[in-house]
Image (cartoon, rainbow, N blue to C red; front, side, top):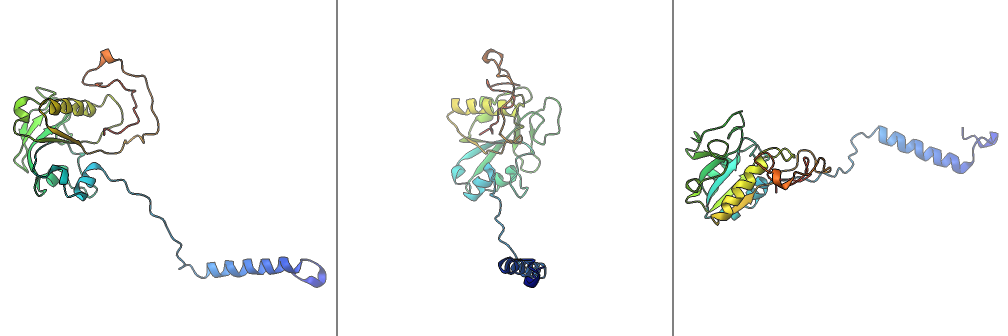
Length: 215
């Protein structure tokens, strides 16, 4: 191909082609060559951040935790267990949303006692959807850790609103351990809810798909 006598190719072209050929052979016979790979940035949920901070925000507080089976850290440890064993934190009550503390109930749920911790589990989808004065007695803070569905008619956002209002009326600190919007958060769709139509399945005037996290 690079025979100059026959005028097939210019010497510079031949030199370039030889360099390409040598480089190709070098790459083929050296599969062990490693190219730098940049790791994707990590997303930490609220409970992961709280753990990383050694639960500093809750130290010295008597805490009520609003959660269900979705309240876990990146290693699969439940938020209930983490707060129950967090140094300096006193977990004294649990609150369950619709479908119960384990997410397996399709009806109204009664309050109960958690078998693992011995703590009371106050149902916020039973006789009442809002925490009563008795449920909040002796608490310093409420912590909310539930994975939302990204749409306004999932009642977890209403439970958050109801408990946040109750915390404000009782002068309790309130912490939302945020989690990503499972629908991505890039799109907002659907009509706005009229303010005079708000209820437990639509407590805030927002689109059907709000494109936000609960936090």
